[in-house]
Length: 306
View: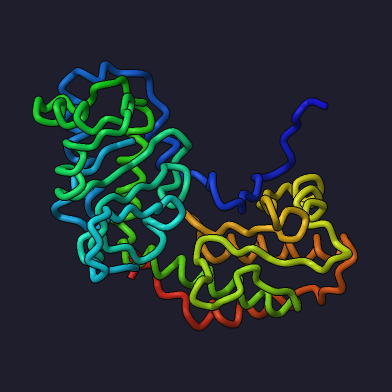
């Protein structure tokens, strides 16, 4: 069957890819440019400096591709921050992280296609004597062109670079700490809704709860894949499937990126109707009410409108 758009906007609540803000879409709507022309290296230089801010590092070297160092272990510490950087508290320098990475399609709210890696001086030094096979992701290729001031050993996506510029501008306009606080609110509101529905979070310990995605356990008589299918077919909403061992047992609600509280409430209302559709005895409005009660007392004024 041919794909047909549903009325209105698709409600995208998977844990990546995420909704792309209009300013980012507009910034990417441009023709190709020669990445060796003066404009692209100048923009790349500014982007790399601003990327350091989202990793909270002053010494790390970014490449566009909570713990501490108290362990005193010679191994380098690498953090997979794909679903957390720009959404959760992350402090590369303070926590002694050697390599951190994220992707464009998560909290940065860009299309898939841009990997961002930030390496500490220790990691850069270690790479000089590393024996691992490296081709496309050899830092030395990038560093050589960084020193030349042209930055790109291979052809980048010009459109994604302009999109990244717009995405970072939105984050800095809101304030990185405010962005993180917003994700904290949405994670808490979602968990309160799940509790009001009488369902459980797949994450067993509270300290492991995520403020970017919530995996919801369903009763044994419900196939969670049916919830995801129903969301798409009837309500034009995308939810995440359970994977591997929890396939069919959980569905996932993504709440990350350029997303506000009212959008989240729309998602929660949709989930309630879907739960009713598949035979779960949910009280319509229960989860939305729980989330509303929390959010109404915790949403601050928009900083730029005060």
